[in-house]
Each structure stands twice: as C-alpha cells, then as structure tokens.
Length: 278
Image (tube, rainbow, N blue to C red; front, side):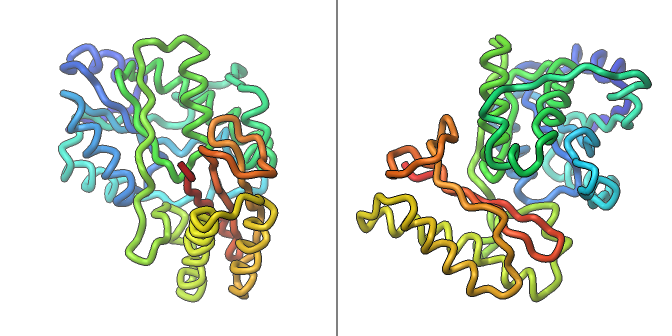
C-alpha cells in the first residue's frame, strides 16, 4: 500500500495504476462503513485509492474541525487489511495553499437540509471533492447513503460539470447491530447518549411502517416521528424532512421515491440518518 502526501506524487502514481481505478474519499477515523466502500470498490476495479483529508472548508466557525477525531495510523492499518492500493493523505496547505480562493458551488439542492443548517458546508464539500477527482482521476467514486444529500449533490455535480468518465456510486448505510448508522462522530457519544441514539433509526423505521400501512400525509408521519424521538430525554431534534429523493423538495403528500431524513443532537454531537422509500 502506497502512502502519498503530495498532489504531484499522487498524479505520478496514478499513471502507474491498472484501470479501472475506484476512489473512496474519507475524512479518516475509519469504521466498517468506510471499509465496506473500499471492499465494494475492490470488487469492481483493478485499483483502489482512498483519501484521508479532514477538509477545513466544510466546517463552520462553531463546528468541530479542531476536535474532529483523527487516528491516521489506525486508519492505515485498517486500509491494509482490505488491500488498498494507495492512500492519499495531503496536508491542508497542499490542498489550500496561501491565497487559495476558488470554489465550486451548486444551486438550490445545497440550500436545503444540511445546507440550511450549515450554510457554507456544501461549498467546502463540492470544492474539495472536485479537487480530489481532478487529482486522483478515478473511473468510479464511492459514497455512503448515510450522507444522502452529499451523495445527491456530488452525483449532480459530476453530471453537470461533464465528468463523463466518472461514475459516482452510492452504497447502502452500514449500521451497528442496534440500527445506529456508523459514523466517525459516534465516538463523541457518552454511554447514555449512545443508547439513546438508537431512536434515530427507530423513527425512520416508524415512517417506513406508516407508509407501508397506507399513510401518505407527510405532516402526520413527521409528527409521529417527532413524538417518538421526544420520548428520548437526551435527544434534541434539529430537523426532520420528508422530501422528493431526487430534488429534495419537501412533500405534503408522500410520493415515491421519498427521502426521509433527520438530524438529532445529543449534547454537541449532530447525528444524521435517512432512509429512502421506494
């Protein structure tokens, strides 16, 4: 496994990699969800590159960039076990040199949900991922459904910026046995918060059951989800959304495909999760 820190070296090494090349961008502190993406990429490509880069431009001023969990040696050991070909680990100044002032921005799809809660977030995401795509030049890139809006945004970005040689692939959320979506931020949770966090998936499954039982009124589904979450005393609802799964337009009447998503805070930790009704 080759560990690469400079853009120039990554570009040189890319020329030696057998094609097709799969790419898994990460911010490190890896878990089984990341490894599932790498394994899937290995099954579809002759080479796989993983990036580890905690991207400062997608964090707001009051967010957790400085405290975001980091353990690069642990990450590298995990990536060795899944036979990753190369790990691109650039320092911040390599990606954003002094005077950097170029951004990639999408329109209204980034102004909703996480974009409404974190106004500068997606500008940072789309900019850094565009840079990574340009540096690694993958044939396929892999993202998790847990970050559903991000996956939609990046798929739309690749299509509309004519990245025609790149396929953006979204894979199912990997969950703990009790249903909690795997996330690097789960490490922040106290034992009591970790126990209470299972209410996210429980509320999503409730929405699914209500739909299967014939409920189509999005407001009623929203209210029942809220009622369930509020039974957990440590949970603070940031938002619950029932939206068109392709445009993220909020729905009054549930029509398929629909993205049911939510963000719930436990202390200072924001946890997000979703399911798609198909």
